[in-house]
Picture 1 (cartoon, rainbow, N blue to C red):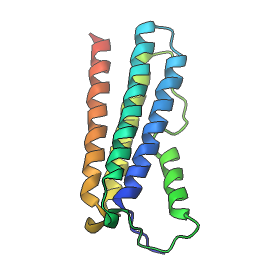
Picture 2: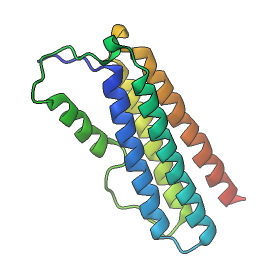
Picture 3: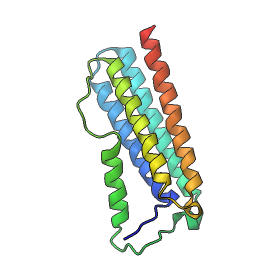
Length: 158
């Protein structure tokens, strides 16, 4: 079966990725002893929470055409597939050295880069009429995450 994703699908995945990112930062915050590092990680988790809300709002602004699926899917299998992709693709469970704030930030930057690559690839599966250009908003947000994380990483090296 050929399936075109919609901007709605992409925003749904983006929301899940933000939830996963927030969980990652909160888990890391629980495992660091430095109060400054803990505070930063909690702030990053809160930022992910806000981005999730932003993506939910943007998803709410989509046109009906951008929300309409292109195939008959009575079991909502496409949504399950997308959720599984979002859960495993970027902030997947892997061994991260949480004893070092530097390593935590490096892992977060890699995850954000992976998410950008993921969304760029997804754009190939979202036709123009289903909101392809809306994915650029998600990509720009993720690029903003990288800027913030990189700035924090650089400040640790100073």
